Length: 502
Image (cartoon, rainbow, N blue to C red):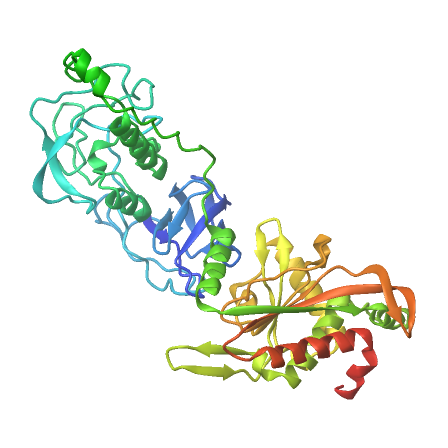
């Protein structure tokens, strides 16, 4: 019998604690080589292909596509070679791995095998809720709630009352026995061995926080595995049962005097609106967390100005007509930003509130907002202050392509000191963007469109753009912010101003 090794979700770096399975690259029964990618996961930072440190046959996968797993949760098991002579069936030995995988784990020694118990209870389309139970002191083995015993005078729910107005799923209403496998008995009626069939710590936490005993559920996963959907269904069913009317004794008849003196009835409140719930996870969840933190911690302010970008557009056309690599407009704007930050370094800083200090940064790592199918991401151009327009154009192009392909690394998405946001690509003129925490400022650029403009004392049609600066008011006052924005506008209107700083 082959040696079975368990491969867990590794630490993907940058403080990430969980990842969502996007696509399995192997099936159960496939033969995999050492360091072969076996699953594609999405973190709050990027898409990552996770290589397996063992070579052998895949015997099990843990988690369907779309499932979110914490770091350290099992991903799959691999049967490697054959056990040494005399080793017991199902025993495990230490094998060799590649040692050349992701952050946070090595494979010079195989991890201990984790036995997966397969309960004999039938799988159901939804989790079922057992009858009301009285608490019995003592923690449950799964850590979710106190163990319970059937309450006196209560039996299984009658047919047709399985919650939410539907018939109960198979196995609904079975009382838990209180044994270690969560109330699931063997085929002969004797208790089966093993813990509650739950793999995900997230499922256990959800049940614990809502006071739900997992022994009362019949999982809909393979071999009765309890999934997050089962817990959510059980909670909805319990909530519906709590709000449904219960039979009561008939009210006594009222006298005519009581009827005439009774107060007017208050109308029942309107039902809450229904809708679709969309989980905040992955990139969307990371964006939500960062923007919420920025709004809580940063007292931001915004100033803006219109600028005549006609000469900047002509300068770019002249550069590209001269031959060589094409210069992008965002690269020219980035070059203007780095020159402006050299004059106003207050805006290339961060605030340390614990030390009550403003930290002015020596390098300019320029982030730029990029909209992708996965959501908004902010790749970072390292040492932008040391790059010319040609180098900036190439780096912007490379990072934009990686963002659209979902192959940006966590290092390419973190460490920015200032952000350039070109929302003009969406066809809008202005915006008041939220500062990308923990940075201190963000320059926004609207669309460049022909507009009437007074040029050299006469009305003319010029290429006009609106520029906005959102800044942390703790690092500077309006005079500094206005000076920065005015310098940027002057460079847009008169690109020759940049020659003084080149």
